[in-house]
Image (tube, rainbow, N blue to C red; front, side, top):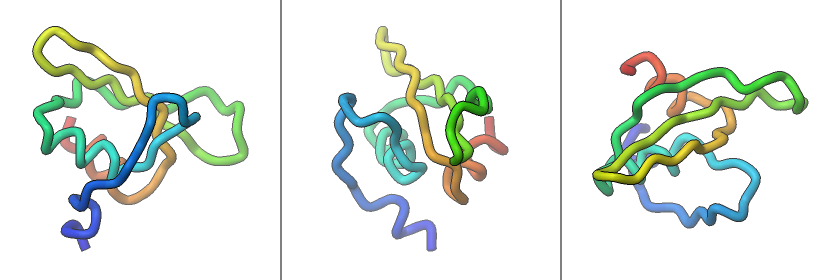
Length: 76
């Protein structure tokens, strides 16, 4: 099952939120997850704020809840 999550998926910063497989892809590209927090309840779907860093870059990514992001959050 995790092999499916590691396949590359297109995601653009102009999209409102990403999915856990996008975070998995970013990790494979050298990004490191610094923290995962629950986003404020402003949406009918559960969202997480994932803080990623790579070299001198930092990025906060709004991620839709799902098995991949829950697994990532448990490891941080």
